[in-house]
Amino acid sequence: MTKSQVSIPQPIVAASTARRRAPCWRQDVGRGGALGGVHFGMAIAAGRVLVPITDFADGAARPEPAHPGVYALNLADGHVVWRALAGNACAGRKFCQPGYSASITVAGPLVLAGSTDGHLRIFGASDGKMPGSVLLVYDVR
Image (spheres, one colour):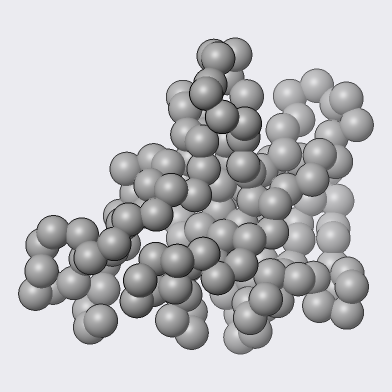
């Protein structure tokens, strides 16, 4: 794909090229909802689209559970290469939700993701694991 464009009609990620206006592929990566899906930005690195998903609880009944986390999709076909699902680190704190609402950043082999639970997490871009077990989980509260 050349000159790729990625758009988000939440919670679906779709890709198209400059030559073809219709989506080349579409991938569901979250449940969506009033406060779910992709809120801000994604990143593209090494042939992958890196997608932060929130899937906040918004009080509405949903047919499927939330899937907050960071997802890496193959840029060529949209298949999920890896996913790092958000655990619940809120421990009952008011206004705390697991998930990733902020734009994510790629720095070489690392993906930096600020979570809505107040932590900054760094994942390996190639596999979604926290390098060396845990490279960094920083509580920003």
